[in-house]
Amino acid sequence: MLSPDAAIETVDLAKRYGRITALVGLSMRVERGSIFGFLGPNGAGKTTAVKLLLGLARPTAGDALVLGAPVSDDRAHREARRRVGYLPELFRYQGWLSAREVLAAHCALMGIDRAARGHEIDQALATVGLARRADDRVQTFSKGMQQRLGLGVALLGRPELVVLDEPTSALDPVGRHDVREIVRGLRARGTTVFLNSHLLSEVEQVCDRVAVVDQGRVIAIGALRELLRADTVRIRATGLTDGARASLAREGFSLDGDGERFVARDVDEERVPALVEALARAGARVHAVEPQHETLEERFLALLAPAAEGGAQRATAEKKEQH
Ligand SMILES: Nc1ncnc2c1ncn2[C@@H]1O[C@H](COP(=O)(O)OP(=O)(O)OP(=O)(O)O)[C@@H](O)[C@H]1O
Ligand SMILES: [Mg+2]
Image (cartoon, rainbow, N blue to C red):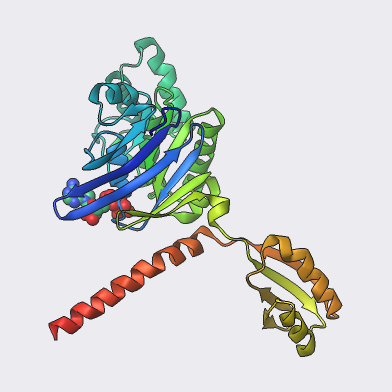
């Protein structure tokens, strides 16, 4: 049963384009006021999911509620859509318009009160760091500046939900940092943010929950801290003889490395004190112990590996057939 309290909820949402299955069996819930990251390699189905949520494409199966309105109910969805800000993946504004004019045109399209427009536009320009270029033509903007402008458009009218398709793809490190701050600021005022990305470190730094999608299927979904294991411990210690290492191994702690720096794998955080005790008992002098979180990139690659292997096997099989 779909729940109207979530910002987004989907059940078995699917989209086919002819023979291509762009998305299949997408079931997810995005809580209001949270930041949700939708990740996957090129062609995984991320933009397709966004288009289904925004009513830009129709699902072949399943349904989705966006701010409580089903995408299958045109009228309700169109009304809800007014409370959603959207940064599309590929967009171009008329080059001869200034940033301010682009924003003004969108204010008009959105039916924002005339008297409120000036303030709304100034706020958007300031938020995305374009205030000083407000009256320059868009054709004189760099890619990153255009992306900032797109983000400004998505923020007009204080939407309840902001959907960003690759918001940082054209941005330099400063721009990415700015977008993270903007996204966090949105969450702080209760706005929900749904963002597509393949830039994992970006996502890792801001998202509360993520879904990883590959070849149209969700292969992992959950809170970041549930998805990322913290089971590797870096150790700096002296006095660890081979005998001491053997006795540690008997206690279930096998260390890689030599000299002073070691890595213990498969040690979850609760076992770290036991590891330190075991090191001391074995006669080591412990200088540093640092549990390491798996990075999202490591997790992502591990999740995608079976598919990649399958792909490689398929490719090999096809090659054999040709011979
Ligand atoms: N209008 C369309 N007609 C036919 N196939 C499409 C259409 N839109 C998307 N597809 C296909 O659906 C699949 C998913 O595409 P989608 O754009 O959702 O991927 P994505 O995850 O956003 O990728 P990227 O990271 O490159 O933006 C791809 O195989 C793509 O070719
Ligand atoms: Mg895309």
